Length: 244
Image (cartoon, rainbow, N blue to C red; front, side, top):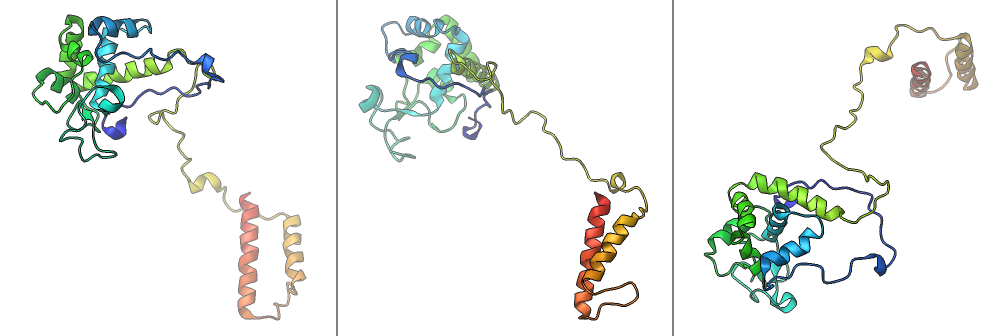
């Protein structure tokens, strides 16, 4: 949703999948676009799910995105000046001019109804006709922040209805939660001053040095650069042992 300009939704993860169609709600439980009594119909659909008038109006605001195609739903124009070029498959009728942007223009456009190329279904129009719905529709047309807040809460509530989670309380991937910060490296925390090598360590280093032909009294009879490489390797090894 933020990618389209809308609010961040408080998602709950861990939803358990159903194993068969018998565990799913029956088809035909979504609201119709043009019932005889739009307000009563919306309440019949959403009240049974525990949603109220404010949440009905807020969720209706999702029509700020997308299009309606008459060949699929029976509503809308085949194409308009806003949809004839896509993006995606061209055609259909949108509720808003910028139908890929999530904002409160849906409520503004329904209220004004000045553009015949914008879709207004009976269940859209009733938001400004029913006194209770109108209270919230007017508010959202004026206050986008209020719409975003109420929409995010209603969307999360609707999404989680009837769902089972594992663990039962679900879990969150909230990016705003404080994350563990990597420990800042402070050299003093890892240094305790000069450390003397143990006798066992000295013997081990001496044995490895002698194994490649060296001795405490005689330098290696080999290439100068090879000597340098051996010294560097020994120092690196010693350093790793001391630090550990």
